[in-house]
Image 1: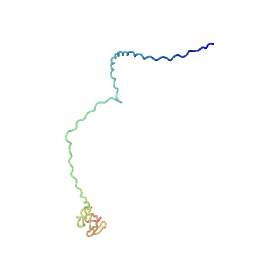
Image 2: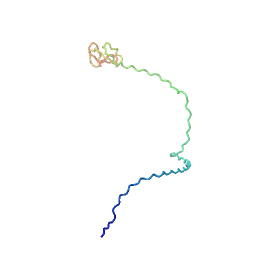
Image 3: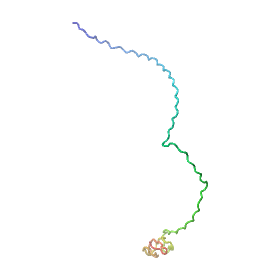
Image 4: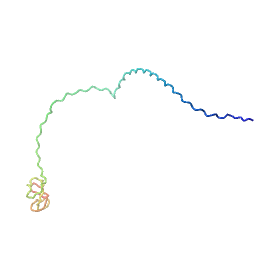
Length: 143
């Protein structure tokens, strides 16, 4: 029996691809169409009332102007009595005989020759004690 071959042998591979064809011409752009006119703007709407009781009343009456010129100045009162002068401060150290009169109550001093150191005793010179003193209006006292 003869051999029947189903389908014949594959043929040779396809041939080379040919060159690309030239690009065609660019199409023309059409004309832009006409823009119509702008429409008319309508009227502005009515403004509504502001807040509760929107009506503002009339402006009130303006009073008469004040007087122009300098204000009257009252009489200056009398100057008060000058107060008593306070005691003098503590001065530089001195001797008992160098102290001023003890007539200003509360005046203070410091002596370098007191013969005692007893608080609130009348100071007397002749010693070697260094003590603070104060005036009682009559005498200088240690303290």
